[in-house]
Image (cartoon, rainbow, N blue to C red; front, side):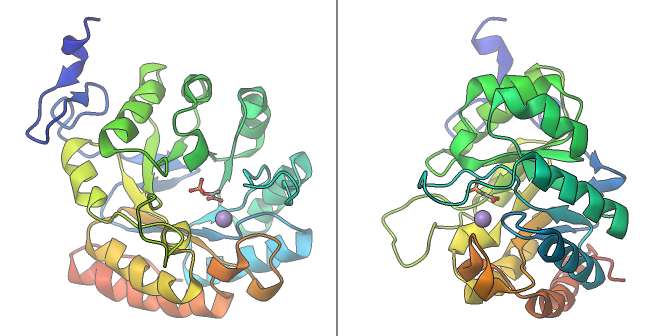
Length: 288
Ligand code: PEP
Ligand code: MN
């Protein structure tokens, strides 16, 4: 295809690639994760620990977030850590624990894949594959996950523009996989008081430019437990189709990202507030 023929002109200063463009497909896409659909009127909450640490930690956290109203479990088995000396995740053992948490709770799960060589294995276990912020422009990885028929949760690169984010998603659709969900998780700005600057403007912007569902990660977006509820509520109000929230049964003992993880009790309280916001904008969050 010619360079220009794959882009749809817009009034935002750049063209949107053809497969992700809302001009090409005006109706919102629904992505089905083990029977849970994201992109419809219900706002879907994904919750769980940053990293899978142990059977007790995962099962306890998974059943609590389910009772709180989460529909999908999260948990990293392969962790992209800034330091090579930090805990790197349990690997395949973590995937097996996620699978048993799914059997116990019925919750489908999303987990990160960092390397093209791991895609087939992670896809054997997971209901949705996460491509993390650090890998948003890892083009071989985008192509590899695009060849699977698993839903893909694509997180915005911390230095990526909305245009680059949409182009990264286009890589996946271009391989034949249209089950893609975009996740705003905060970008790097001059501000240092929060871990990242959660770009909530990106939500209505993305929703206007693409038919793909858009969710928000207020945990990595702020890096601060006490701010997560405020930004989670704001994300629902601004039109996010879902949220991904870090929750830990003992946040103070978490190996990874405990300072931004909600306790299971804080999560349950937040869910009640989130439902009220969803109802106010003619959406819903079903609670058990
Ligand atoms: C995560 O969700 O655990 C994670 C590492 O997120 P990000 O890629 O957005 O930093
Ligand atoms: Mn984390």
